Length: 319
Image (cartoon, rainbow, N blue to C red; front, side, top):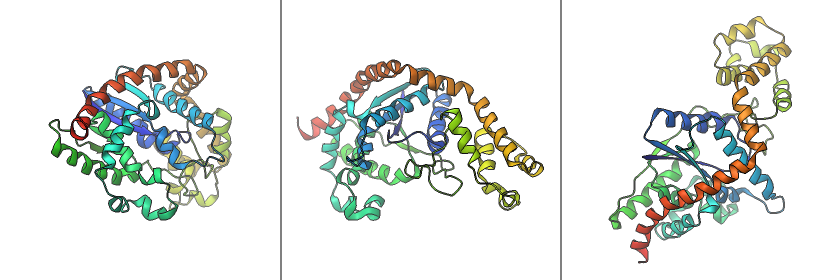
């Protein structure tokens, strides 16, 4: 069986960019290819690159972790083909990280876009992020990696490290193929801001009904939105198109100048279309013991895979 690795940081609620740009395409790929296992890494070590201990609430981040798993499970795909694990549960990854860090120089890491952006204000763990990400990938010997567009550079570093290891190893590690959805990953709000907790602009089909309704009502609208040059940039138009995949949206918006009616219609359609996904999601959040048991079982399954691969690192560096 081939492995598709999908890493998600538990530092936020899942928004439309994650849902449309990573989760749905990865699950679609799983359904198309019967010879594929989807392994979802909850990257809680990577999450620590963004925290400030003065405001850090670990229970909030643990809750985000359960929300990620509940969203994946809401699609009702067989658990024989999907596995979840928490990065901090598998310490062997840090061992591979240490081996990899002996193969890459600071000067080469300084070429990363993160260093160029933050320079001396960059935390050490954020600076070493690409090395840890490479360790996650090689630990499972992944065939495919689903990433965001901003992580392509990190995967190039991973490929360099794998090629170096393969020179000395009898067992040849797979150089993974990049998978990413160009269109939706950087999905932005109506003010062209990236969706994030910091910007307080997260929109998701998994929010509570009243929150979804309030967010739809707050969408900025005016008669200028109906201008044929502006309509495609209109946030209501975008939500109709990407979430509901409706045809003739332009005609609908042109005919009905009552934006309150349009917003109410949009809200009802979103709730009705995703009713079963939402039911499953809230069911799992109310029964977190199912999610905890799943993480516990998967921990040992993933560890078995990783121990097979780590043997070759030990053979090269230590034994």
